[in-house]
Image (cartoon, rainbow, N blue to C red; front, side):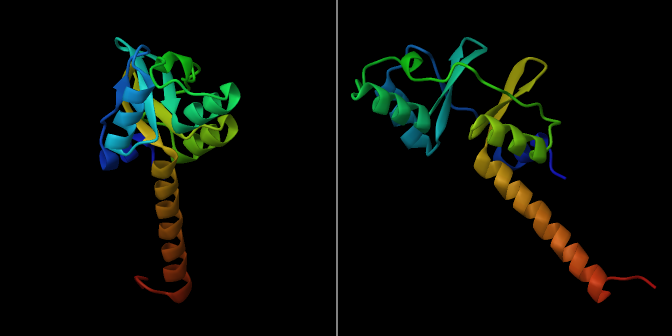
Length: 147
């Protein structure tokens, strides 16, 4: 079973972030440049929120307009749920499903150490299931069985 630290070893610990005063346009440019779906919003070393593509779309739909020079703080989700490096991928999927989040910051000893996405979690879960299937097939067919 994979844990979050395994995912970070594969994808790296880079986290893209902006400040609450960053304009929406600058945040969207960074997201496009890095090909990511969310940015952490940081005030110093503290997580102030998260800005996702969904946050932007919902805010535009609710207001009926979008001013690209508005600060990210007007769009971001302030309630951020993080996970630890020792959380399992199953636990992460449960949080993401229940809370309708696609990104989770990874915190260790109160410090931000990475961020995972639903894509990272799904790839890991698929890998786990494929490994289980191969193991069961080998067992059933008697492959790699030491007599």
